[in-house]
Image (cartoon, rainbow, N blue to C red; front, side, top):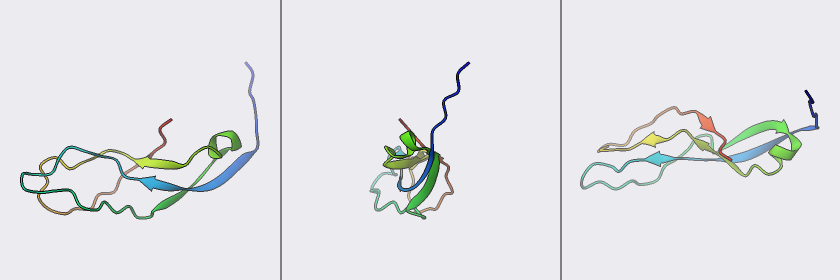
Length: 78
């Protein structure tokens, strides 16, 4: 086994919402506001330096007819 080490780095990146589905009939999806708008990530410098944003887990808006809030996890997709 070979373990390669490199310097760590920290950086603030944007959080982007990911949604799936379509709202109920006669409704359109308005603004999706993410709070906080950014998150601090830490990791190997080579990975952190190229990371521009992270996604929320998918939020299903299928057949929704009212505004709502939801606590979601964050994901890093390659």
